Image (cartoon, rainbow over all chains, first blue to last red):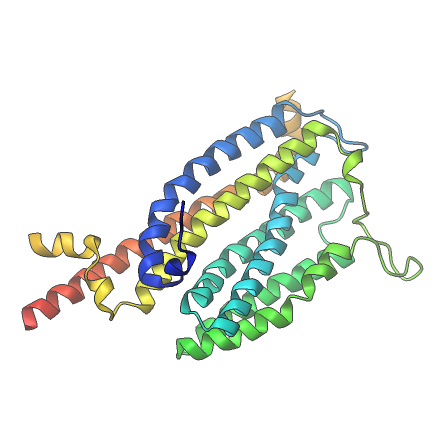
Length: 252
Length: 53
């Protein structure tokens, strides 16, 4: 199949393409979420090392934390493409990804607090990983605030792209901030665990939920980018010629 | 088994899974709403332009 990817770098081509892809992300998201939750709740042991049934919060906590980091890399990637190639759609994709990334970061922090209370006896601790994840949430919020604060969208895109690229240093920091840098100064609640140590059903349920969250992200980001395209291109002829606008116009 | 889990950990698991579910369901619903509103506005603008001509 000869697919011309550059064709889809234009908002006019990408808008209908993203619309066609939406059901392909929606139904697998539903199926994988149901499968992942069933697997996580009914096919896994009741106890994980010293933790009891509440450990099942990991089936949303860990995938949400992974997605929060991954989506930030996606934003930085689109921002870089936008700055280098000056393509409007790249900036729109970055802007569409930010709220979903922020939601996943919030979910990771929120569920982490509830898991922390049951397993560590505390809602919050200034553990390196928790603190860096909180800073990531602030970077997401800063990115969105900067986008909203500048009226000229081209300038807003460029400014927020630079912010996204500056903030990308947080990702390796979060990933590697498992143990406290100096055990004499502080204790870290998050400790490194090898993937081999995780029971296979727990691991697969977690990976299924991660895939579900990943497809969910595609679904909502494509939905949001369609709204952004319509908003920014509303004065163009191609938007005016869209079937969903023309179909009702004739009848009324 | 489930009665015991809910009694012991219902609060923690309920708030974790509940808030996650609400956020993840609300996001596409709000985006749908925004999309419908935007299409309505664009249809209105398009109709007005046609009348003007």
